[in-house]
Length: 224
Image (cartoon, rainbow, N blue to C red; front, side, top):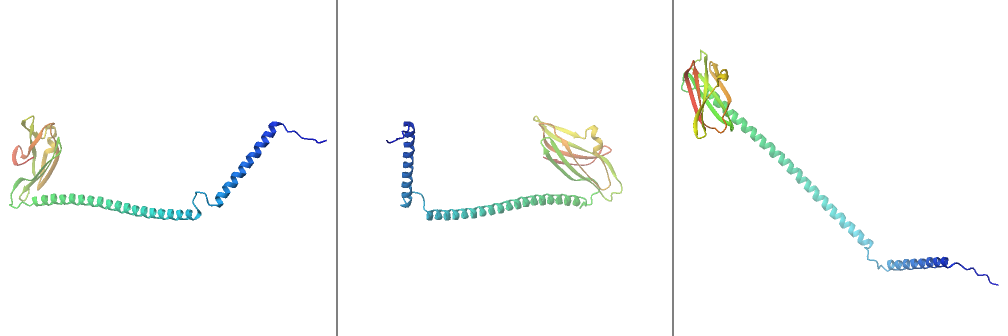
């Protein structure tokens, strides 16, 4: 009598599926192995990979060299820009110093009258607009001769303006600022200040008067 083991149908189906799966996997593995052995794969060979790596290294080296050259040019350009800025500042400083020396030279030359004139005289008058409604003046007054006695007086500034198509004159100082326009010196005195210009007015000329006890001793004017 023969004894047979009967497996349930579901278990046999699972077993058959496993066996078929293993067979298919082994077959595919053998197929891929054969392709690799016969050099049928499309991927690069080892020699090709080495060549590509060498080319990549050359390109990277060239890139590094170009970057270093660019950095060197940038550094040189920054240095040249800094030097140019410094030279411009030096040139401006020298120009300012030159103008100051010219002013000082004019001032000292004015202290020595060539004609030996005696009495009070305005040796220098400089007028400039520093803003649309501001006028700056500089005046140098000198007493010729030996200057044994001090001059005591005051000065006035008469500003001629054109406003609304009409000409008008504005006299400084105002009563409340009269003390700021007093004079007292033996040889010379320098005055400077800023005057307010009415809105919309255009300054045409400025006249400076030197007074002693109300009497006119000297005057000078400058047109703008």
